[in-house]
Length: 127
Image (cartoon, rainbow, N blue to C red):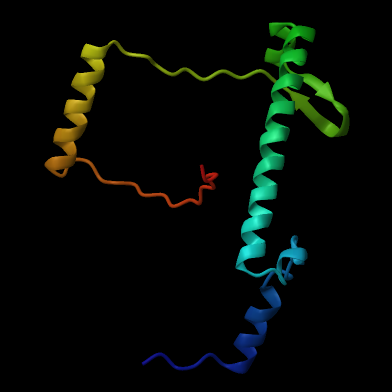
């Protein structure tokens, strides 16, 4: 059995802990479940509106700056740098897509693939 930690060691460990950060959302502490759901609905609406605004801003910035400027970065106030990045995704014809799905299904059945499960909340509006 492991002996308990000595008071001096405990004090030393406690002194090395980082300071506790203040709660960034204290206004949520007193909300009940229904109020939290309502706040989630409000925040989701705000995020959707802001995403639409960001898309309009991005379109304007893409029209304003050239590819080379955005590739190397455009300095913005506050130490920010606006850069253009790209990512490639692939679109396959139906024959290749079916073959890929078949290989994936086989690997799942014979244990060569492992499931990765992520849990998230999704709000949907009743119809």
